[in-house]
Image 1 (cartoon, rainbow, N blue to C red):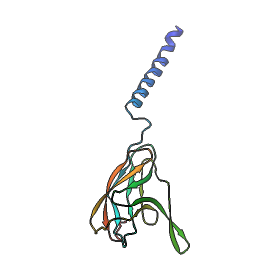
Image 2: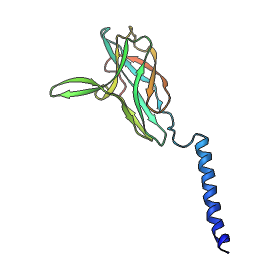
Image 3: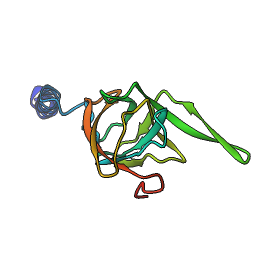
Length: 155
């Protein structure tokens, strides 16, 4: 009689383990949903030295991710940077990553974190260029940015 009483809990535990194994095997456990990036903005450079690009990042998943950098073929280099206020002036410093929390949206901006684009090619307002954003956990994301005049970042 004791064996019969133990059978339902053992069967239930076995069923749960089978379901968890299936969930993991199908790739649903422990993997973040890819971060989604909407079309961004890149400032038309006043000189050929550098400019900035901005994107809105959305993480629909249950796990956080982190933007670790970006690339754009024609640019000399792309650096993830943060604007730093120092009294009446400002400067910038490179950052290793930009957190994109689970189920949230992060907006890059000229007063926060953006992409410093070193030695960009000449751009015209309205021109679209393609960046590749690199994430710590998720796959790279290819995204377009439209060139805008400074002050026309669209928020």
